[in-house]
Amino acid sequence: MLTDLLVKEDGVGAVRPPSRRVLVAEDSPITHDLLKLLLNQRGLEVDIATDGLEALEALRTNSYDVALLDFHLPQMDGLQVAATIKAEAHGRRVPRLIAITADPEGLLSNGTNCENFDRILPKPLDITEVGRVVEEQAGLADQHSAAISTTQFSQLEALSSPSPSVLEALRQGCLAWPDDLETTPLSTRAEQAALGDPRFDAIVVKRPMSANALATIWQHKALFALPVIDLTGSLGTMADLDASKLKAHETDRIARLISRFKEGRARLHRDILLSDELADRLLGRIFVSGRGLSAILDPASRACVSYNVALEANEVAGQADGLFNRGLLKREFVERFQVCARCDSERLHVRNGCPKCRSSNLREEKYLRHFRCGFQGARSDFRRGLQLICPKCQQELTEFGTDYEQTLTMSICQTCGQADAKPVIGMVCLDCNA
Image (tube, rainbow, N blue to C red; front, side, top):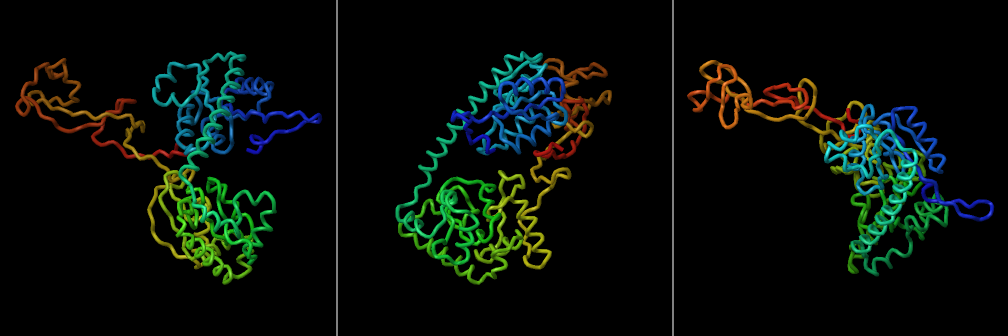
């Protein structure tokens, strides 16, 4: 968020720090109103979520310093929200997570998942303690972000070290992303570059960027028609050339790439080059680059797929479908996915579950049949210390094949006690928990 990065000056020139932003996920109106009032009085910006799904969506969409999550939230409990947002981070900043609960024992019994919380505050809440802890955790969030930024910069210096000859080859005729864009309006530079101005031949990415950050390329006329050269080694297939490891004798690859794109732009109709339609720009990009859309499996993406352009996967797929329907693209099979009926996510967790209550908390147990009385049951029903005793006739079973036999293996639900020979196969959406 912009408010997280800027400071404001008041009328006398004093500088005020940016306000902290806090998410309160609590289903009790009285409690969340009280917390909002308390935190607002301390100068904190507060958003409210009343159930787990709403909290998760807020954490995915916005940037927070601290999130207060009630343990027993409707739709999705606080443990699940914390575990999900941590699992989806992939290097992205995650707020400090504080659990608020009247059931601390129940929370702590979840040994693994409760470790996703940075602090636990028991109910009834001590208002003074809540304010102190939130401000303390917000301060730790700042320290953590600074440490991550320093580490990432050091890793980039170590892993991405283009040779001086490569840097010299890129010094002239390129838009340095994002540095050069701060001095000249983006649309002006983009159109100059794509329309043949010899000063601009490529986009050179000098800092690690996400697909969302690079997607601004598609929001401006003609910028899509320039090759993307990556000096960070972090863009993968989104870049036309990874120049982070190029050697001195390989600089001709840069010249060949720029020449190919120049030739493609010269042949591309001006109406496509300057079109306001994303579908036209995507088609123009395919033509100018001389390579089709390629999909690769990407577990970090919500769609489980990434494409070789700097756009979110679902956006690419939607535009490509439209171009296919117009007869301008052809389809090639890559992979088949099951899709969540609620949110269209392809990130589904497949597991065996109880046919009665749908829980995946199952254990397998062998079933035995006593020949003499015909009783059949779980092996644990027969177990008496080191002996096997029939629960029906109380006779000891001593010899397999003579006294008893094993009939089958059953799945026992640890949640509801249901026993079945075959559990059902179910799927849980990792994005909306359907």
